[in-house]
Amino acid sequence: MSEIVNHLALGFGVAVSPTNLLLCLIGALVGTLVGVLPGIGTIATVAMLLPITFGLPPVGALIMLAGIYYGAQYGGSTTSILVNIPGEAGSVVTTLDGHQMAKQGRAGPALAIAAIGSFFAGCVATVLIALLGAPLTKLALQFGPAEYFSLMTLGLVFAVVLAKGSVLKAIAMIVFGLLLSMVGSDLETGASRMAFNIPELADGLGFATVAMGIFGFAEIIRNLDAGAEQGRELVQKKVTGLMPTKADLIASTPAILRGTVLGSILGILPGGGAVIASFAAYTFEKKISKDPSQFGKGAIAGVAAPESANNAAAQTSFIPLLTLGIPPNAVMALMVGAMTIHGIVPGPQVMQKQPDLVWGMIASMWIGNLMLLIINLPMVGIWVRLLRVPYHLLFPCIVVFCSIGIYSVNNAPADVIMTGAFGLVGYWLIKHDFEPAPLLLGMVLGPLMEENLRRAMLISRGDWMVFVQRPLSAVLLAIAAALLVLTLLPMLKRKREEVFVESEN
Image 1 (spheres, one colour):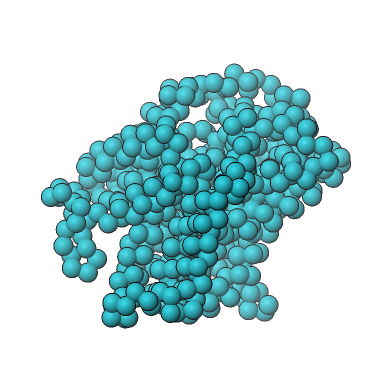
Image 2 (cartoon, rainbow, N blue to C red; image 1 turned 60 degrees about the vertical axis):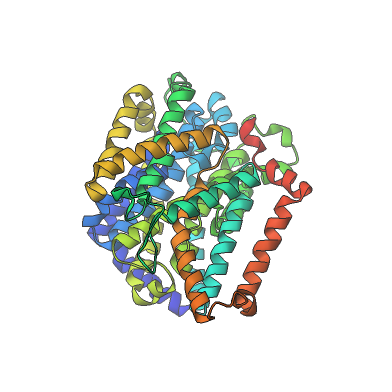
């Protein structure tokens, strides 16, 4: 315990420096703005700001990007409640009861409970990161190439299990992501592969290029197609009476606690994250409620549970990234990109060699959560006014910023063209019910899987049995195989789809 206290003391020493406090505030504000404005998205924003982090110190850069991620979970609830437009995918479920409360003139309590639940869940999740960080790092140091390959295979299987919709489509997305990661040069021989003699593909596909196209540009095209102007006329009245009543607090406290626990667990699992956590928390609350019929009609538990769950999940998803070097979701994959830009190799070595970086970021999450609680409630009026900006004026600005961000990575016009092409690919995927997040996970884990596969095969002199002869590797592969088989069973397939049924109502 004293070791954790010492680590946190070191972390707070790093986090409270004026530069890092300012970057934490910028991250929290930008994140809230991203959450409020539909059609931008956390992934596109983090991808867009990656080039800016070149000139920042590594700790400050990661603190700012982390602030954007968990800040967006806060911001998404504001629009979900006020205008029935989820700014973030994780806030889709909040619209069901949050907007009904706003229609009943109770937008204030809904926003306050969302902020309180988010703050509590964020703090609990940060404690979990501090507690689990050191033990998991010690475990990770026992891993060899075979274990790492098996762990990443398990991560990709989890992404399939927790992906929305068809299992086959989720597998197809992962395979597509793995194929995209192989474009460029062979890791060992340097021979060109899948580059089709195109000079711009010689070094492979840029991660930010694919992420920005498939998430940023594709989302803009989808919003234009769906008509993102809808619902904006609902914001006319001033939001008053922010404080929840005693009855509201009594009704929402158990839901906040359950949402926090559920979100914390699901955030650690690869492929899970804030979206699945919020859906699962809402479904669970409805299942155990004495009166399920009140859900969808303004039940405060229907706001408290998903908002707590998505914030807890957003923060515990840092655990596998910091301890094992494996990103559990698309935003964490971008964090790997940010670390690589600064010459940091994610994994167990980081916690040992650069404790100031890891613990500084963990401590900054507490500070960031407190900042978000203080800035979010007084700024509701500003966010509401921003929502009145017509989308046809908003989207050109987003496209320009995205293009500048992509161009500035390599100063290559071809990158901007490729991002546009991936935008069309992403739009096609969305229209045909393919979930793009597993693709990004496959693309990030692809090079790491290939490297560890080759190293394991070299050590074992080409013997494939190395993956089942090493106990830890065999256990991880067995869990992956069992999960895949269970997911394909008809009964479990039905249950899996029930989690997402609320979003279609």
